[in-house]
Image 1 (cartoon, rainbow, N blue to C red):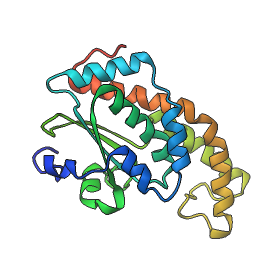
Image 2 (image 1 turned 60 degrees about the horizontal axis):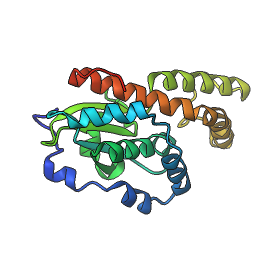
Image 3 (image 1 turned 90 degrees about the vertical axis):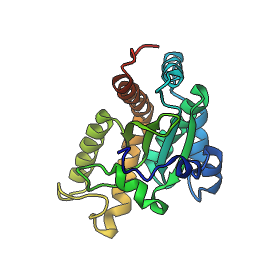
Image 4 (image 1 turned 30 degrees about the horizontal axis):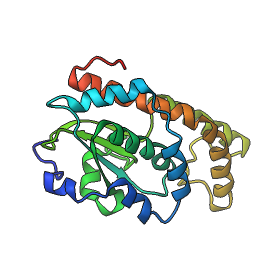
Length: 210
């Protein structure tokens, strides 16, 4: 990823800072505000990320790919902003739809999905360390189970997705899913932090404790 990455030091500097990202958001500013102030970070989490950032090859920079309309973004990006603030990392945010070349470096689902948020950890020289995409593995599994439950309730085919549900039923489908997943957000946010700690611990050979 380093050898051919479009994320040069100069390109990284073009990203939005968190306050500017929220200011330009056309939707969900209230949610970004809520989740920024309602932080699930523990003292141990903050200590870990600060120790990681202090390493010579540690994560001095974080690049985020995001869009304000995305539920995974407004749930997870505020936590990343708090991590950056606490650990002294430089967080820069790029709008996914305006930066397809960056997004193409971090596609998920075997290169088929442009899932966001993506959080990419870099050294101060903008060398790639690790990245986290969308949500934790546990949250992925829970969401799949919830969607199956809602599809059964609404008599939708098991293969239906948000994109393929008929227009007449789409809003009901969305409302039902959102109503079920929102109470899971506190645990999902903690799980994301846990996964990011594990990613950095492995990449940096850093003990994963507070």
